[in-house]
Image (cartoon, rainbow, N blue to C red; front, side, top):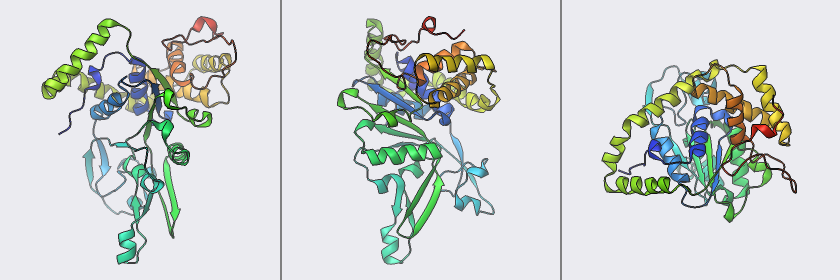
Length: 338
């Protein structure tokens, strides 16, 4: 059995951990892109997050894991059922290999069925496996452009549509997209970069004590993973429960005019193109308020949200003053948001 390093045991990288938590609370944010050098726990954080998430209910006979409580999002097979059973499963974490084919991602025709029985039967792909879960792409900047396009289109629509060889299939594909990359190995195209809701930069910890803690905890985990996981079980359970409660509370959080005005002014001050940035800042602030058990986001949540939603959307000009410091913190004094 493979052991997973606990999410709550990770040292530092608070902005990355927060972005991941917000993205699973609210998949509508558009996922997370994590940029950083090798060895900064990007992959560890993604796998650890999936391990602590609570189980979810699914229609027992459904290959797409449809939610029994949301009939409007069911696949065609579930809509045709007269009755069904309900099962529990861990939220899936599906990893997309860099060398994956389009058929493996989107789904394809089952050749065995076609040859033996003469029937065109759809074979679900990774998007089907990832429905209502996490889809993780390591080194997403090295993924073929047409696969990135298909991936982001499905993430935006929440459905995967496949039409080929006489088969037309549409199934739910609502997942949290998480991409990691090392900028030294190449960048994402700007139009694709903008499709990620949140973006964080990570680098090696500079505090000597934190670096020592990283080494100590990793050695402890490798020496006795069962004991290490048990030591952090209460923290993991508490974090998992807070994520579950925040997701349930999200629809009850309301938006004030002050918070909206603050978000718009930040986006204008930073020269953000289009309106996707404004919308993502607001969605993120609402999600953050739900996590903090607030009824409305305030300026504090809006600024925190901007730090996650805007760094990859800012227009860069020569000699332009940068409003984010080296830690990714936004300086409100340089913005007219009062």
